[in-house]
Amino acid sequence: MTTQQLTSEIRKKKSFLCIGLDVDLNKIPKHLLELEDPIFEFNKAIIKATHHLCVAYKPNTAFYEAYGLKGWEALEKTIKYLNKNHPEIFTIADAKRGDIGNTSTMYAKAFFEDLAFDSVTVAPYMGKDSVEPFLAFNNKHTIMLALTSNTGAFDFQTREVDDKALYKHVLETSKHWENSERLMYVVGATKAEYFADIRKIVPDSFLLVPGVGAQGGNLQEVCKYGMNAQVGLLINSSRGIIYASNDEDYATEAANKALQLQQEMEAILLS
View 1: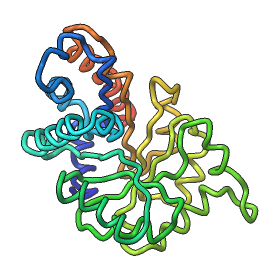
View 2 (view 1 turned 135 degrees about the vertical axis):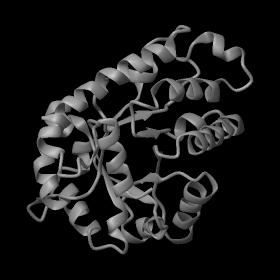
View 3 (view 1 turned 120 degrees about the horizontal axis):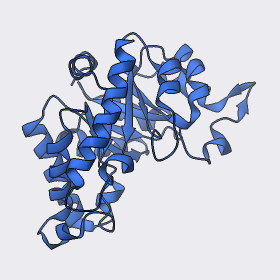
View 4 (view 1 turned 45 degrees about the vertical axis):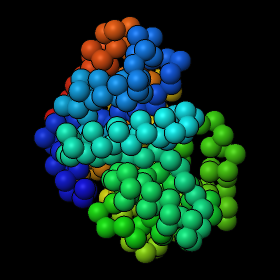
C-alpha cells in the first residue's frame, strides 16, 4: 500500500484510527476460550465490528509469540483474513525488530513476504545497516521508533548529544538512508509537546502515535502539533477499544469506543 492510498482511505473514512490487536487470553471473554482458536475468533469479531471506523490494524507480535505455535498461527490467520476481506486497510506488524545485515533481511521477508504485512516497526539503536534491509522492499513501510510513550524514553531518547536531543539525531540521520521515503516513525502521544519539533525534521512522514486513551495521551494536542497537509498521523488505541467489555457484547462495545474516536477525528479533519 502506498502512502497516497492510505491518505485516500483516511479522507474516505474521516478517520486516522489504528486499532491494536494485542490479544491477552486472560482478558478476552471467557466463552471464547472454549473455541479451537480463541485469539483469531476474538480478532475476527473485532475486525468485523470496527473495520469501517479505522484505517489500520496493528497486532503486537509479542502477544502472539507468547502462545507459541498456536499464537503464531492465529497471527497468520488474522493477517490473511484482513488482506482477503479488507485489503484497503493498512496493516502493521508491531515487532520492533532490530538487527544487522542478513538477519534484518530475514525479519523483513518474514513480515513483508510470508505474512504480507504493509509495514513493520523497528528499533534504530544499531543504525543504518539494521534498518535499510527493511527499506529495500517496494510498497512496504518501515516504522522506526523515534520518541516513545514510556517513562524510560527519558533514559536515552531525550538526552542531549552535541547540544541536541538524541531522538532528533535519529530522525535527521534516518532521512539520509537509502529508500528513506519508505520510513514512518513512532512518536508517543504522551509526548505531545515534542511534535512541533519533530515536524520540523520530518514534515511529510507518517507518524504512528500510541498512547491515546489508556496511557493518557491527548488527541487534540497530538493533532494540533503533529498533523500535516496529508494528515500524516495514525493514532493507535489498543486496550481502550478491544477490552471495552469482557462479556459477550465485547465486539459491540469495541465498535462503540472506536466510533467515539472516529467521530473526534472527523471533527478535527472538518475543522
